[in-house]
Image (cartoon, rainbow, N blue to C red):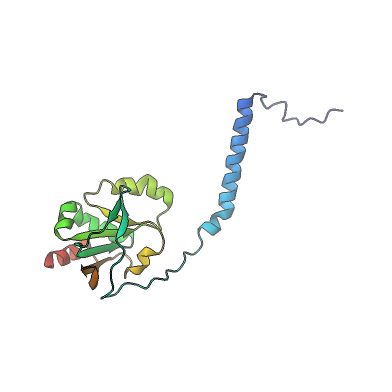
Length: 187
């Protein structure tokens, strides 16, 4: 009596088909593992041990990657640091800053730092970063949990740190891009 698997006679015997079946099996296994591990991947972020900045502190976060993948070192001439904690804050500022560009920021000794670490990786790589590369100004990006926690912030609003010789002189939070630009113009 022959106990062969009835599916075995229907499957092609060529090596290419066998490799494709193994490849599909590996992909299915990887998908299963990702599904099982997803609760671990979505676990709570570690709490930052660094305290939030306050007036009088030295602003020592000077090394960032920009939207083009270049490492940027903030010069000591920077007097204004604008921090964007979320997309709502970015959108509000982007509306008023897009027409002004990098030259405007340089004239105000200002830089923009955006915390994008909560953005899903594929969304960032496939959509957000390519869109950011079309901006007329440079964004200094925070791509890991922790460093953005040092900035005082409120959801949907922008934080402006005024510096002198890297010492924080004042910290203000603005609700709109227009009000932040008005503050930059005032000094």
